[in-house]
Length: 308
Image (cartoon, rainbow, N blue to C red; front, side, top):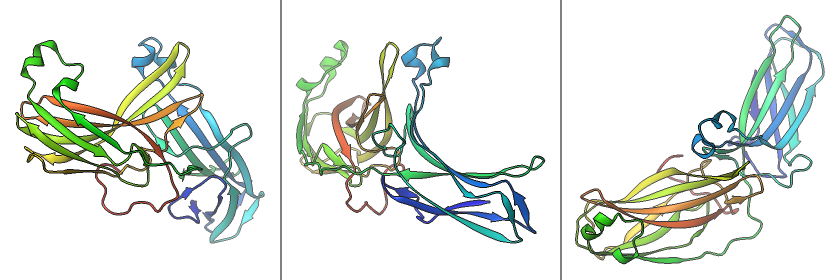
């Protein structure tokens, strides 16, 4: 048995009609007790052991939030003749009763938003049922187009925080300036900007850009916050020529990023860290909180930096 969708990339938006077919190879013919389709969409939440404590770690999985739950009978009990049969189906993608909306497909560490379609061919008592599952992807577009918000920055020693007292005298003299084209970003477009090393008394080993997801889940005693790396790309290797503009360009990975979310059950934010690593392996980091949304613009194509 196979499960096929008419849309080859398996990507849909709320309100779309999802159509496909259950393909059954009946061989010389077979009887069945019905063929059905199930659609399940949910948000699965989990706390880390660090958040809830070692003894509570066994109870760290929270109740999933059901977004879509439906079952459709596509063929009543009967028999299939010899050969391959294609049984069509279609349904409208919309949230279950009581749910205000659907969310972007997202694969995180402690938060997962996933949509799965399953096909089931029920057989007789002494025969094994046929089952097949397939993930499909949901993209939720922003209703209003976000305005770009340019952010200029300057990094120098007097702005550093969380520096160990014994290392303050060893901090080199430096001045880094630049800008981000926008801290309100369309996930279908590259994250862009520019960095200029104005001066630095210590040679630079590397300049890196790190994308971080911040996942928040409520639990009995409060809110658990976990920040984990999504991807890290290098934008400069070795000592950098002073006053030479360095292009910041990062394509945001599909499935591991989505629009910024804030609900009563979970919250999802994103940040970008700019790392400048010196030859002695000490590092200066600047943190930029960003807001993501999804527009209906055409997606970026081509080779991507980082994971996909």
